Image 1 (cartoon, rainbow, N blue to C red):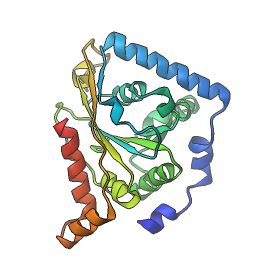
Image 2 (image 1 turned 90 degrees about the vertical axis):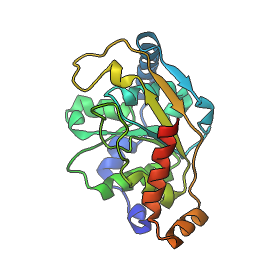
Image 3 (image 1 turned 135 degrees about the vertical axis):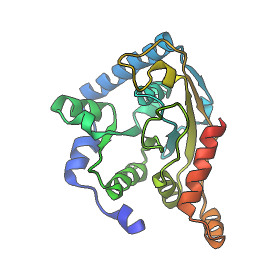
Image 4 (image 1 turned 45 degrees about the vertical axis):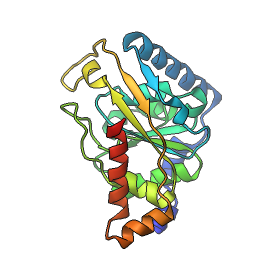
Length: 232
């Protein structure tokens, strides 16, 4: 994994999504997030708990459960504005194929990934962001829950957490499934609660112990992160 993470990203990806935004685009991003923050509190009566667990500086990973289309917007609108400027998330690439939507992705700090995107590319991009000091919002289930129950986590987040030794902050979203369920075309007015938990760091000593005990460190770390989210 060290060799994979050290490989350079494609110039196209770096230029399109990771290059600094213009002043105009930064302003649009801030105004958009302020709008989502207003909607979150007015329409969904958003309650945020544990915001003090967010470190002032990155890199770190937010690991959240995924219940609804609106989950990324809820999380991004809940964090401090200074945090948003350094926080990125992965988004479903088929939604961002037009020029306008690609621009939205860039302004909204979304890195599009899709079914054709190799896992190695996704992890390499995520690692590059974290190594540059930026932070990352990840939904480790890799899909929205169709019944509101927490799904198994994919081990990619365990790979990032173990190989990069960055803090992972568990995030639990409640109420967004009722606010915008999978079969609904428009959202419903339903309260949403967002809870941040204490960060987890998986040290080399912990990883060595798991390995000695015959555990796959990436899988074991992923299970611990899932437990932390479900326990909030």
